[in-house]
Image 1 (tube, one colour):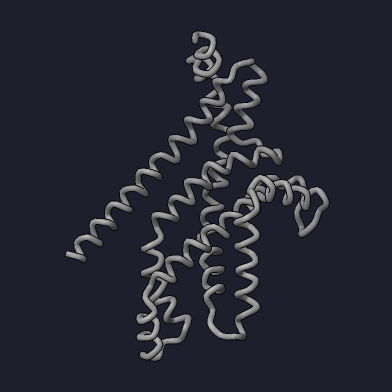
Image 2 (image 1 turned 180 degrees about the horizontal axis):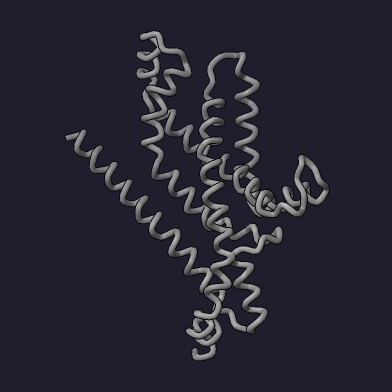
Length: 234
């Protein structure tokens, strides 16, 4: 037991590893913030395209479905390796020297597919009668989406969106496989330099301190919504 505590919970190593691991965790934070902002916008656009009416929009709906099915079914770690492979071959303007961009692209591709389905579920939860009423008042399809459907849909999907972003925050650690020196890579480097794995626990603490508050906030949002729904029923 003493050897285990020394290997993973040594106070001296915890303090010594913290600055090094934090320097890598900054990259995780940057990656998380930029990826979440892009995913929120792109996923909403894909969800809207997937719901476009009419035969003329069928090819666009098909592409949106193909995209979401492909990237929801492909593990993130595999997408990271594929993007890095394209970068190694200098395809699509990527290069092996832009590790942050390569990791960002992989995260956005995968999580946009997941969040698209969250948005779509929210859009479909709005009763069709509201769409018909808006169209009968002379609103176009896009105006109906903007002023009637999306405000309700987005409010309803906030909890699942936050849950997806908890997953995204943790998955930023996977970019270490393409060579980005983030928190996990710095923790591993500390382990190699000092033959002690306490740095891994430091990295775990950083991720926990980031994800637990968001998880509790998600629970709070869900409870608030349930109380409102019960009040409306009564």
